Amino acid sequence: MIKSGVRWNLTLLYGGMFLMGLGALHIAVQLFDPRPWESNIGWRKPILFGLSTGITLISLSWVVSVVMKRRGWIPSTVISVLAVAEVLIITAQTWRGVPAHFNNGARLDQILANSIDTMLIFITLGIFYLTWQSFKTQEDLEPDWLLSLRLGMVALSIACVLGFGVAIYGNLTLNAGGNPTIVAPNGVPKFIHGMPLHALQILPVTLFLLRLFNSNLSNRKRSVWLIFFAIALATLYAFWQTINGMGRFELNPIGLILLGSCVVCALTAMFFAFPRNFAR
Image 1: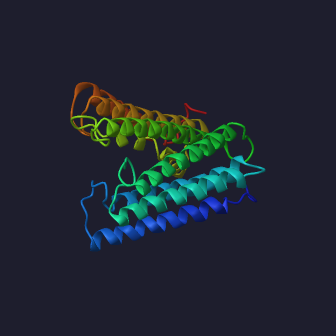
Image 2 (image 1 turned 30 degrees about the vertical axis):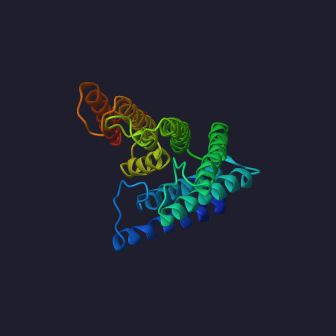
Image 3 (image 1 turned 90 degrees about the horizontal axis):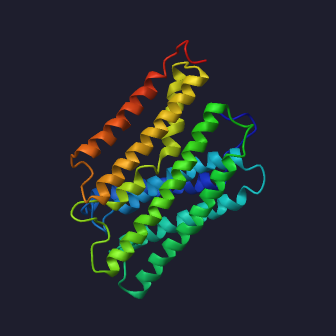
């Protein structure tokens, strides 16, 4: 995957491993102290934020090792320290029994919620910077790996932008006296943000599996593009469902078309996994 001599960035790697462990620990907490899964003060948040942010930091450790020849410690330290701090605040608020997000209650809760938003601005700027750097990198990865890295970073950047959109909607709704976690009657704003969030893991893992079939380079690159399009269509599906106030799996014609197109792209990507002579 990566030429010899390239090491994963340890700041992001250790930060990611810590958060993965924190998320896993709260799975046990959920078992011994059950709380409603969708509750704003449930153990879901420490679990999902720990695991999701942790695996993202580990993936970014690989990205930084590839795209940053110098000064890689600057974006890696900013992203890792702030991401760990964000999840620790979310975890601490859950243990206190108060929401970590969209909380206009006590002064301390407001400060912590605003701190999370501020941290996310700098984390996002760091991710944008790494995405830009990824398109300047040419030499350390084979073309299909490099493509999966670039598209994964693009999707992660889009997820960050969508996350801010969700936050803006939530705060405006909260200030208007509504429920910030719902687009009436059943839409779930975080569904949009979450859909492209893990393309940086999905694309390289898919590529690894494709290589097991000895597919040629052109086929592998086609498959990576198709999986990326599938993720994009899934994101459009989430957007359509949410803005129309529909739940994740409420059936409707346009939603079915988007979801069906997503499945077709994914299946076609698998088709290209097998060695064929027409794509050289």
